[in-house]
Length: 575
Image (cartoon, rainbow, N blue to C red; front, side, top):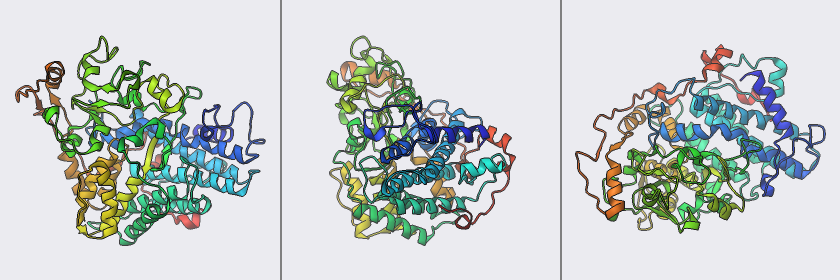
């Protein structure tokens, strides 16, 4: 990190962001009205001072969230993206923005946390807000260590500036970074209320994240098996959330991702965006990168060329070469994750009676005015998750308009279903399977919501949970990090699975889809409609599981290229 970034972080964290909101949850201090001397003077101001940590510092991570989490993992196809073929380097703009965003979260959280110590407010609200800062800090470091491996620890911005060491920091061993994350979450759990307002981080949000951290850490430095103590702690924290948080899964899987459910009780930690361009960074812009041209009225969608991968489709048990009329589509998550021929969505384009995927593509003159006119996605599928719909859908959902590259759709980054699957996997542990009833119940709770006809199994295997995680969390920025944690203790298995994926495109799908739209004919000619016969396996090696640092950071701080050092974090740092 460079000095200009530290100064920006401290200034922004003290003043907050200029914005007024339609929801109290997102109210923030106005930059023109407050400064460090006269802010944090009551409970409301403390809450406002923390609110922007739920969005703005995370803004520049949005593209990395998809490209690293989904494209790199083989869940999503994006043309010539370097994340598709593992050629990303330290000058890649999305990687640079991702790194700076994660450090920004840490910097903002540090400064707000320090300022809250002297706030003139009730102790309960001060504790709550400090706890929220620490969870966001832990989440930022969790992404950093899983993305870049060993990273520096910036515990106190003011101390770093005063010491002048910000451009000479050494990387800290990954084991120690995980210990720092755990220490941070322990303090957050101590500070947070057991149950908070919907959408806000509470004690069980922190415990859910702690379960995920322990499950990930359990394989670090291991070979073939995982640390049993870490697995036990992952299971313990997960079970506490399952049994005592008061949270439950929504009845309908697709409802989790709708505007009206931005702050639903299934979601433990979410980015909550506000639809505004002032300040730029408060808003969700993912629809622009993922939706087909013409999907909304703002001229800001360009993602039609990409889409959920062939490999992900096959994981759901579907194929674009199978007629939609004959498709076996028992998993409700498939349609809620990817648009395919024949799909119609009642929650998109509600003012038009719903969104018809093929009609939108091929009826460009009327229904799909401004649309592509032909199938763009080489995989035959387009995104559903992370989309809000058109302007009317946004008004119906939030009571306020969207805009160009602007929406208020929340991005959910830790859900209860994830915690259920963490518990099931932790209980399996180093065994091939388990008959533990509580683990099976956790797995089945997730599985049965998606596949109503699914019977409750008598035992579950690691492979079943591994696949269930993919289907449940697809296109939510998570899958790559599953591969990273697998690489900690079984790198060859992770490499082999990635190399075996179908990450390329089909030929000839436009004529197939158009024929089905015009006359319901779905005749596949193997010479015309076929998977790319020249598709190559990606060049995945053990080093692929650690992303490069931004080149600019390495230039300013050559120590980042040196071996990481060990730090006893509990002796070195404290809250």
